[in-house]
Length: 489
Ligand SMILES: Cc1cc2nc3c(=O)[nH]c(=O)nc-3n(C[C@H](O)[C@H](O)[C@H](O)COP(=O)(O)OP(=O)(O)OC[C@H]3O[C@@H](n4cnc5c(N)ncnc54)[C@H](O)[C@@H]3O)c2cc1C
Image (cartoon, rainbow, N blue to C red):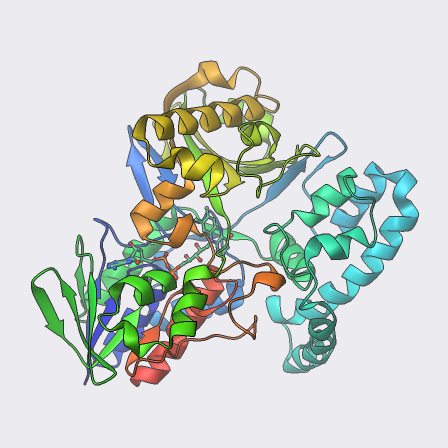
């Protein structure tokens, strides 16, 4: 039996905590926030429930079998998330990859030749990945693995915009749509995965993400684990190059192993007590490394019932693709950025009416956003920050009015989160939503597909999505599984 400290109660921390406690280790999870879950969490305001991080999950095969192993699968209501894609050129809810292709051929008949060439290449990616994301035989997986290895070689260094630029005119609607289906300038390798997971393997939790975190927390506690909320770990203590404890102010917890299920930069640049344990070059690399983009999210409680909202939205999740040609997430001086960006609309009350007051509905508007926008959202000036947040919120509500006319007059509760809000609540650098930058030219790890839990400090492991270049729910879970093996589970 070992004493294990886990910093952070996101999915990574909770999964590792459960598996280690089940093995009989003495595990304490330290969480700075007042509730567990990290990006897999939510909150209630005036009778409305909203998600504080992710709205969805993919890779269900891996996630569900793990939840069964932990013993919480039956306590969490995972449901399929269906999506509608809307733009000036198309409006559809593709059920499968063939439907998606048809939607594009119907919308852009003049572009048939280009679409043929593009989909011929994407078909290969989808075909190689399908066996891994859907329930398939070992033989199908092996064949997919061989095909994937070739595609990995070809596309691991290529950005999405370069890849898409080979098929469509720059600044055409088709170029803008396809080059933005994941993060800006994601590795081209991700096109196939993004399509299959979005179409065939897109899930959410009917009770809200917090119900998932709560189920994992209850199970962890029942196994004898301890969760200390409101406990920000400000130091990882080392002796002779080995992690030996964690501290919160004057309180110290001596342990045998430490799992940092939290932000990577914070772990090494802020929490580690001895910076000399990292070579200077490594410290510099960590400091400069680019992280994944953040989100601006608007939370709305509406004086409109679900039936009326459903008539307009049709499905709980709608992507309103309306990106203007000069929309550039890296242009931090563009005060009109939120007028130009596409938005996603997600109504939790359409998924589950219990998540809003009787006769009312709820809506979240989400847009990808940079933590550096307008001098880091006002250069530290609180009033300026408030004004910028208000401006972004109003621009996004105005955008959503293209789908829901008169939305502004239906609002009875409103609030918003910027990338800085995400950072404040989770300590993820710049509100990074999914670990490091997904741009292959800015990669942190040499192997973008690897899971890098080991650190230069003995008995200190990365147990969060930051162990993977492209983080996410699968990255956090894979890191948790690997750290558990390292500790002895
Ligand atoms: C808007 C949004 C949409 C997303 N969509 C998707 C999606 O569709 N699919 C997908 O796979 N992923 C998605 N993600 C990403 C995914 O949610 C995360 O990658 C994943 O949940 C991260 O889990 P984690 O355990 O690594 O870390 P986190 O969830 O970030 O948890 C870290 C926890 O550590 C705590 N903490 C940090 N530092 C300390 C400290 N020093 N002391 C104590 N506690 C500390 C934090 O408070 C936090 O609770 C999305 C994220 C966001 C924000």
